[in-house]
Length: 287
Image (cartoon, rainbow, N blue to C red):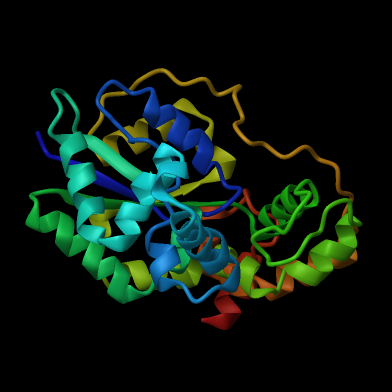
């Protein structure tokens, strides 16, 4: 039985929490103590929001006394201090009877540099474990809107480094869609480019939010990870954002233009799924 570590690299607001929930209930998988461990983004991604929330905050907690940490924070603090503990932790999960899949689905791993991806691949390979990557994607405009809805509900500082609680949806979307925090999570083409420098094509799984909640896609995910098919609750939308924002066509078109490289990169796979995809004639013109 092949042992597989699933590296989930996003995208945020694209169904990663649903995927984690499904895998957590699978008898052949053990996803450990959390969905998002935020180890390698805290160590390798030069983003102020990530560093402050997932690195500096834990350092401050440790300074106040390790006994005051929640078990998951204590566990991750150990991973940050010595990443070998991270690899050993997931290796131990895979040593359990009938378990052949474990993983870490942290959407901001979408911004990991090639050097971090190589480390993850090689450290698990030394332990006889195959790393398989899943990149879940969603229409960039819809993903941005859903992400804005998320930050509008945060009463404190969000991962963008600011508080947007109770703001006007269109105003916040206009402010954020081209911000570093949104770009690192929404330029799937750039994420895939880095993945392809490190992993073999058969170890990269590309899936789409728009077709995720169907048995055919669940079967593809299970086949990709080497799992038997388990029935899924497709009516369940974990962490789903309610449609509270009305976005005018002018702003939608503006966001589409900004993310045009993403639409062009995945046009063949998402034709009819993403509204911003260029028409076939436009694709031919640009070739």
